[in-house]
Amino acid sequence: MNLLEDIKNAIDNMEPELTAELVGKAEESGIAPMDIVEKGLIPGIQIVGEKFKSFEYFLPEVIMAAKAFKTGFEIILPKLLEAGYEPKGKILIGTVAGDNHDIGKNIVIALLRGNGYDVHDAGVDVPPDKFVQLVREVKPDVIGMSALLTTTMAQMRDTISAIQKAGLRDSVKIIVGGSCLSSEFALKIGADGYGEDAPEAVALVEKLLSA
Ligand code: B12
Image (cartoon, rainbow, N blue to C red; front, side, top):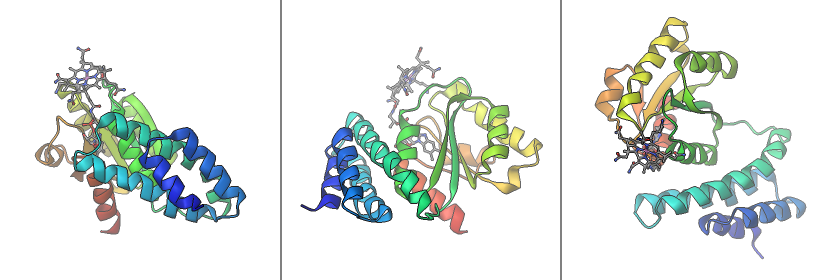
């Protein structure tokens, strides 16, 4: 039995419990934690990302697959840290004040984690001063903000101003996303980039951190 292939398929088949069971078995059988992530969990969530982009999968499938990925990843994370795993970068991400939409944000988080980033989820309805406080605590390389409501888009500008006023703007890259936004809007409010979907969010982070 190829456990890594099975983990990949369990994520693609949206099975959180099976993913957890297989990750446990893989660990017990002595497979290195990093191999479980790189050859099982990540390929699984990447397939799902591709299927979502090509309209083979829709929202319910992606949410379940992201849950499967998260369940498996949480089991293996302590072992990865013990083994000296170095994430590619630290990301702080939240949905802005007044907005409780988090499905898209959570997919972005799953894909970023799947691609080797340490992601701190600030949750939903996050006001500017909370973002500032978390930037001080978490010290992220990148801040991601999500907004789905036209009425909450302005919170992104306010959050960037608050980060600037706190003297923290030069220490972080800021990216934004959400179906009511555009790259023009991102540029206008002084963000470093806009990502249309989760794969674009990953590509944007890769680009910003390698610049
Ligand atoms: C599900 C949903 C809800 C759920 C939210 C559940 C949850 N836990 O998220 C519930 C029912 C609670 C809800 C409530 C409301 N909703 Co609503 N909701 C939706 C709906 C149907 C789907 C949103 C969604 O999840 N899309 C799927 C995800 C995968 O896509 P996504 O969020 O865009 O995320 C992707 C990208 O945008 C990007 N992305 C997202 N975030 C980020 C962040 C970064 C940094 C990057 C790079 C990329 C990125 O990547 C994601 C993955 O590919 C949309 C309609 C629609 N078709 O979008 C309306 C919609 C967003 N809602 C709307 C409204 C008006 C509301 C309410 C005000 C309704 C009301 N009168 O009470 C409330 C507001 C509550 C609040 N304060 O937030 C409107 C917004 C209109 C507008 N432009 O302002 C929409 C567009 C419906 C409509 N056509 O009128 N809603």
